[in-house]
Length: 443
Image (cartoon, rainbow, N blue to C red):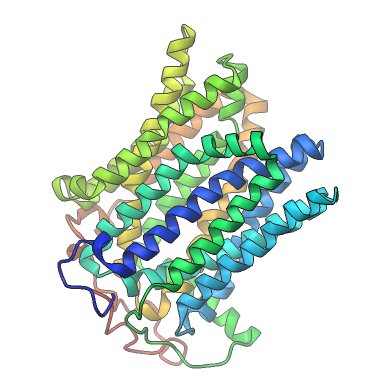
C-alpha cells in the first residue's frame, strides 16, 4: 500500500500503481516477441530439430523448480523492489547477447539454451518476489481490481504481441527482434524504480546459509499443504495447468493436420480468440461482485479447460473450423482470467506477509513444474489414442480441477472478506517461523 495515495483514488490515477502497470504492460509485450523469436532462431537459423526446440521451451520453465529455495531469502529482504529491478536488468543483459552474437555470425544452439535457462531463472526470481511486492503496493480492497487491470494488460499483449513480433522478425530478423524485448526489460526496471516508498514489510532476521534455505523451503511447502485455502487453490491450479498443457503441446499440430488449416488461418483464429482474455480481465471484478467470488472461480475453472473440447469437435467448412478454433481460444482466455484474477487475489489475502515469497516459491515449483510433464503426457497419449481423443481427455480432466475446492472456504466466499485471516497458524514451531509476523497485513 502506498503511503501517499488518497484512499479512494482510482488505481490508474495513483502514481505508484500506474508506474508498475506501465512497467508490466511493456515487459509483457516484449515477452510475446521473444516467445515467437526464440524458436524461430532455433528453427530458421540453426536448423534445430523438434526435440531441440522442445528442450529450449523446457529450459525456460525449469528454473521455477528452484523457486521453493529462494522464497525464504526473498522474504528476508526489506527492499523487494530492488530484486524486481535486478531481475529485469539481468534479463535485458542476457537477451542483448543474442543480437550481438548474430551480428558476428556466432549464434549457437548452446547459447540459446544458456540464455533461455538464465532468463527463465530471472523470470522465476521476479515472479517469486512479485506477490510480496504486490501486497505492499495495493490495498486488500483493491486486490481484485488491481489484478484485473494487470491481467487485462497481459491479455492485450497476447493480441498485439504476436502480430508485432511477426512484423519485427520479418523486417529485422528474429535475433534483432529479441533486442526489443531487452529494451522492454530496461523500460520495466525504470518504471518499477519510479514506484515510491511502500509499506515496509516485517522481515525475519537470520542467515542465508544452505541449511536456512532448506528450512525455508520446507516451511513454505508446509504452510502451502496445511492451509486449507492455499492447498485447495494449488490443487485446482496444478490440475488445470497439467491438462491444459496436455492440449497446448498438440493444439497447433491438430489445427494443421486434422483441421487442415494453414499457418495464416491458425494465427487468425488464435489472434481473434485472444480477445477473450482481455474481455475476461475487464469483466472479472463485476462478475465476482454479482456471482460471488467462489462461483466466479468455479465458472472460470470449468470454462478455461473445457473450451478445448470446442476445437476437438471442430469439423465442416474451413470458415467453421477457423471459427471454432477462435471460439475455443476466446472461451479459454475468458475462463482463465476469471480463474486467475480471483485466485491471485485469494492468495494475496490469506498468506501472511512474512511467508509470501516462501509460499509463492513452493506454489510455483509445483504449479509450473507440472507443465512440461503435461506436455510430455500429451505427446504419449496422442501417439496412443490420437490427437482428437487426447484433446477431449484434456478438456474433461482440466474441468475437474474445481473438485479441489470442494469444502474449501473459497467455494463459499462471496468476497475476499469471507476468507480466513492471514494469521492462520499453519506452522506450530515459533523458533522456525516468527510469531505475529502478519499483524500489519496490507489493506
